[in-house]
Length: 232
Image (cartoon, rainbow, N blue to C red; front, top):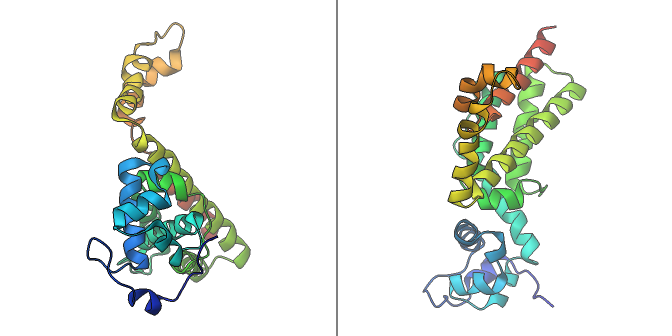
């Protein structure tokens, strides 16, 4: 049975860890992000987290109801990274493009954490603030509420789906990732036109593009469709 989660002020009165740090919600989340980066999802356990913090594993449960609660906090932290310092310009399409790229970039900066968290819905402050912002941009641009929600749904799912896809590639062992990248050059670029005329005709373009993320292109296509609808 875990201990009940206590308020922040009560936590701060507790003695420092073996590393001389006072445990906080943020310190635990940041340490968990580092552990995910270094060891992957399998390496993130309460015992290992406690060792990394210089505290007993049970101390983690004073801040989080369980490890899944910590995962949701990590997800919200990544969303906060995406929104940090962002300011609207008044150009709805440019603002949404910037936000989409920020979300994608924030998750790819922590690929192991992205694979673990990007499919989750947290309902926490950073996520809620981001969703409020995106819906506000769309409604402010003149989209009716039904269309605003539909476009928001496609926008956020697209950004997170590409985040998972691209993060999973970055999370591969280096040798496996490099081997996958070479397939376009070593296999596709060598297919003969007699049997694969379309691949052969576009092989140089495939080699040049296919190891980069398609997210910016997909995002532009989504925004172009929304823009055409608004103009119509």
